[in-house]
Image (cartoon, rainbow, N blue to C red):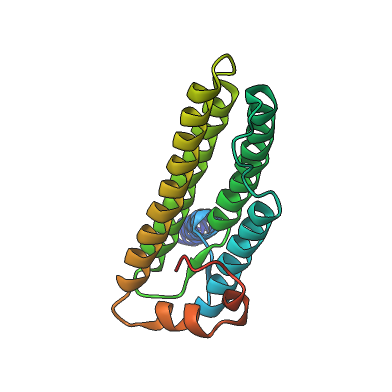
Length: 192
C-alpha cells in the first residue's frame, strides 16, 4: 500500500470515528433533553393531574375538629396523610408533563413543577404537624387544628396565585387560551 493511499485510508477511518463520536454525543444530548409536546397536550396533562388531585381531596374532606381531641387528631392525621400522598402524585405528574411548545416552555413547565413541589412541601409539613396535634386540652387542639386547616387553605391559595402568574407570563396568550379551551380543564379546580 502506498503511503498516500495508507494516509487516505487512515484519514477516512479517523473521519468516520469523529462522526461516530459526534453522533453518539448528539444522541446522548437528545436523550437527556426534555421532550416538547404541544401546548394543548401539556395543558391536558396538567389539568388531568390537578383534577385527580382535587377530586381526591374533595372525597376526603378535611374533618372539622371533633369534641374528642384524640378522635379528631386521628381523623385529621388520616386526611392529611392521604392528601400528602395525593399531592406527591400531583407533583410527580406535573414534573413528568414534559414541556409545552411555547417560547418559554421550559420555564413554564419548571415553574408549574416548582409550584407543585411547594404545595407538596406544605402537605408534608402539615402531615408532621397533624401527628403532633395536642390531645390533652380540647381548646389547644381546636386552635392547632384550625391553624393547620388555615395553613393548608393558604397553601392552596398560594398555588392558585403562582399558577395564574405563570400563565399570564406567557405573552403570546396561547397558554391561557389552552387552559380556557381544553376539555380536561373544565373539570379541573379553578387554579389556572
